[in-house]
Image (cartoon, rainbow, N blue to C red; front, side, top):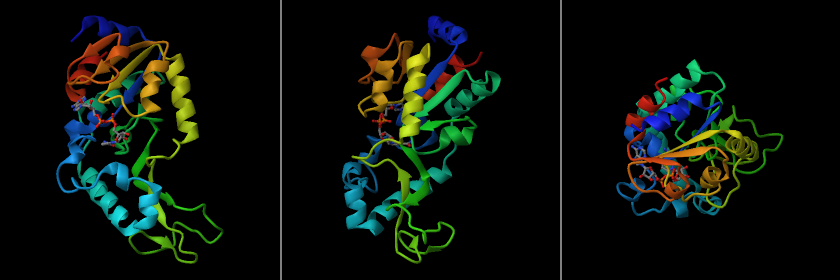
Length: 238
Ligand code: NAD
C-alpha cells in the first residue's frame, strides 16, 4: 500500500469515492464486460437497456431485469463496501459515495446519502408520467406489472442508454467532485460519461484503484493496482 495515499486519506477534509462495477465484482456481481458471457451473452445491454427496447418487448426486457435482480438480491456487500461505510460512521460528513452501480450494495453496507447516478435496480417507477389513477400500491400483476386502470407500465428505476441522469444526484455529485480534496476512483473502466467526467472535473487529488488499466489512469495522481475489497479496508482504516 502506498503510504503517501494513506496520508492523503488521513488529511483530506472531504473525500469522494466514485465507484463502478468493479466495486461489486468481489461480491459476485458481474461487471459490464463479464455480462458479455453467460446466460444473456447474446443480448447486448446497449440493445436491451433502452426505452425503445422496453416499449417494443416489455415482457422480455422485464424478464432480463428480473434475472439480474434475483442474482443481486442473493449477494452481499464485500469488505470494500463495508470499509467505506465504516469510515463514514467514524468520520460523519467526510466521505461522499457517488456510484454508477445499480446494485444497492453501498446502501446495504450502511453508507448514508449514496448518490446513485444510474438508479437502483431493486426499485421500479412508471414508464409514462403517472396519471391520477396510477397507484403503485394497486398494480395489475404481469410482466411487467401495470396500473390496473390505465395500463401504464412499471419499469426498473435505472438509467437506460440514451436517458438523462437524475438531475439532483448529478448536480450533487458534480458539486462534491468540484469541492473535494481527494477522489478515490474504484472499479470503473472510466468510459461511461458523464460519471467518468467527475474524475476529470475535480480540483482534488485523484487515486485510481483498479487491478487493470483504465481510461482514467492518466487522471490519477496515484494508481493503485489492486481490488476494491483488498485495497479499501487498508486505505480507509484510520
Ligand atoms: P465496467 O464493467 O465497464 O468496468 C469495471 C472495471 O472494474 C474495470 O476497469 C475492471 O478492471 C475493474 N475491476 C474488476 N474487478 C475489480 C475489483 N475487484 N476491484 C476493483 N476494480 C475491479 O464498469 P463501469 O465503469 O462501472 O461501467 C459499466 C456500466 O454498467 C455502468 O454504467 C454501470 O452502471 C453498469 N453496471 C453496473 C453494475 C452494478 O451495479 N454492479 C454491474 C455491471 C454494469
